[in-house]
Image 1: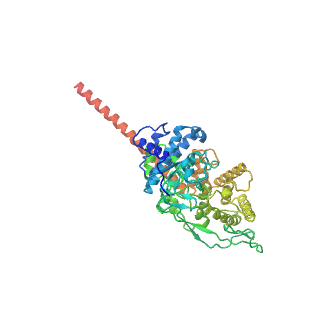
Image 2: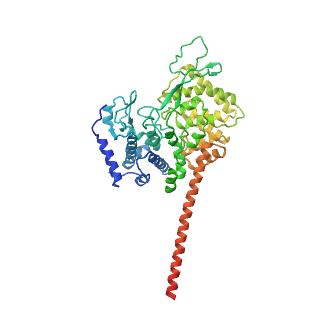
Image 3: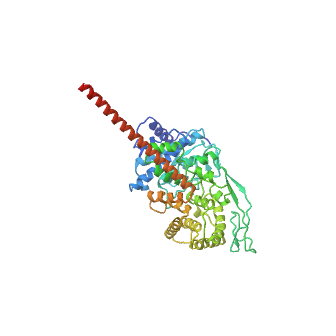
Length: 507
């Protein structure tokens, strides 16, 4: 594909960057410009983490001030400039990694150059994109080296359970610029390899579930079961990038506690204290502490940044497998249901489209309904793992409740019940929901309360975040003490000087 001449967006992007470097005001102004400059935009990957943290802080400030209105803010030129400048900067960092020059396309150029892209004309997040490989490399059928950098910014500022972002090129929008850029780094894009795994037949109440994408629901009519044979995705992403990747939710809730003091938050960022394992797949401490024997469905759901399943629930699935919580009842029902539902999750994880668009045969849906009923039975018996898994499906709109609002209420009820039963996984999940305002009004105090509870009950990631919080508080206290001591010494020194002058005068 030939490289096109410079576009109007190229000139705008270059102008924004030159004005920023020269400390000149950008036309129309930028919201939070001083804070943006404090992020130290040195064109490094680490600087994208700092921008993500700033965006999370802006989101929190807007919510506190009751100004968190996507439509109103997109009509504000200064906020639009903030988002556009951040997108330009992310494109600059990405193309630098590819050793290319950013090539930006506006809506007109995109529709002409990439007619296969289904762009929504009035979607602010789709009105520009950067080609980070000069169009020289095709990434797959219908996909090119384009980066719609406004998408992860929009998700970071305005995303929640009822406002989900769908990527132009399909799949889930990355949560934050750092994660979005890392997913497109040279030699790491699409680094998910498929490994054929032969699975033993999964049985549930005498009926096996076949989720092979090539299966025919009408085949094998003389048998009551269908064999299971699906490919298990292997997470082959570069370890260095994986360990650095920040988790949206982790970024936002931990940052919400630390950025009260700018200098301290910067110091913590430099020491990688704000680089948590992914929404749970990116907290380095959690990554290193994870058991290598994860079930295939868990590794599959974690294998791609474009998974149809929200990361907060992919994390939950891993924790249900990795973190053992003693159950007193309902174990048999839970294990049977999980075997069936794991097959569904494994199949869904392979798809490159939203969960709602993935179809199953009536036989499979009946098996899933049976599994959900078993989860509910186990939950009613007091099994907290069943409560959390059932809550996930209720919040996704795939549970027993037919009404979405009732499903959300039911999901929240089960999570709270598990948390109140001292299940650290439920407490950790509830803390994320409060910090992010997912399914509940955003409440930092409640988020901190449940985070502390999860840490007390042995949740490794929660304990790590609490430790970071305590370190941050200690740094803040030390800094304030040093400032106080300096002022005291200055006062003492001034008194000595005055006394010396008086002695000289008297003498």
